[in-house]
Length: 93
Image (cartoon, rainbow, N blue to C red; front, side):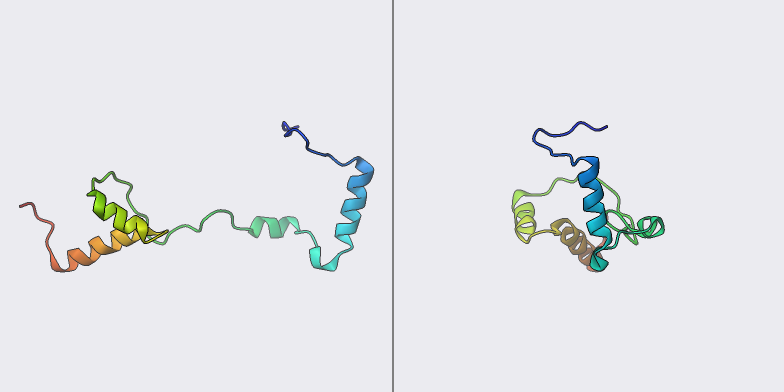
């Protein structure tokens, strides 16, 4: 049995049976079947294209500007770099 947090209330077997019976009688709250649970997807869906994790050093103003744009800022950095590659060559200078 897992360790419980202080103050956790565990129903007695009779209370548990009453709770289960009430839930089972509610047509809007029918429990999933085993097959339905198997079909439940958990977590984020897998990306269609995987990305490579790297470490990169950027100037503070660039990071601050992208972070200020909200969630998904790293994806926007990636998009900006892709746009840059359309008109530039990443050759060493």
